[in-house]
Length: 100
Image (cartoon, one colour):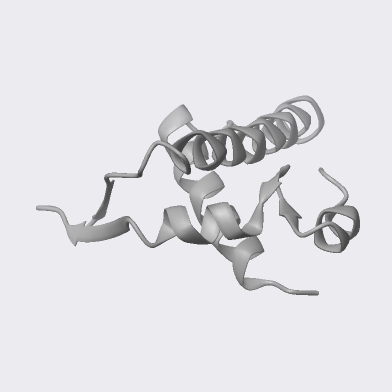
């Protein structure tokens, strides 16, 4: 995983500006789905959409590498791509909230 202390020192989250990501999050909202799930929606402005997408993709890549280790070591089944992307979004939100 990425070195979070370096990211915190430079005010970066998953390689992107905390300010850009916080701004992007202000455009994201949830709604309840028919089966009790939550659906994320957002119409991000062009200046913050690319940093947001890159940050989610970087975290998703970290999770994919972690899942690969589980398959080879513990013979566990990996997350689906949708599950991993949802987990990456949650991890991004947690990193934004964590100011270690």
